[in-house]
Length: 119
Image 1 (cartoon, one colour):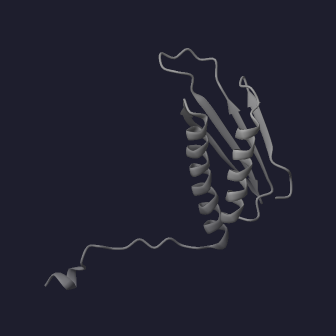
Image 2 (tube, rainbow, N blue to C red; image 1 turned 45 degrees about the vertical axis):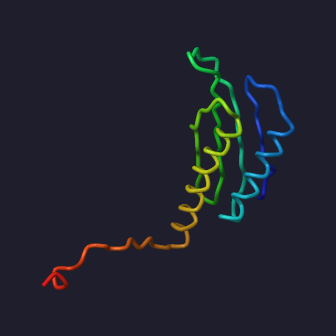
């Protein structure tokens, strides 16, 4: 990664354990697409009034050559579950970006027999 990972905590106390977890997740993203330029992860606890517990929101901004991948969702009471879900979505998007950039084409299996095979 060309730029260091940026991690921002909003309305939530800083946690070294969470920061280490985020850095590990970002490092894993680089295994799927090594040309990542930079990554900014924001973890927040919005001040919305819910009947259930407080929900963590995770936003991941990934800068790649010529584009930016943004994941902004996955609210969950458990911060680690919110991070897991957000990074899973980011992984899928990074992999897809890499496939498009390489020109790879997905091939879907055709399970239906052709008309000639039905006779």
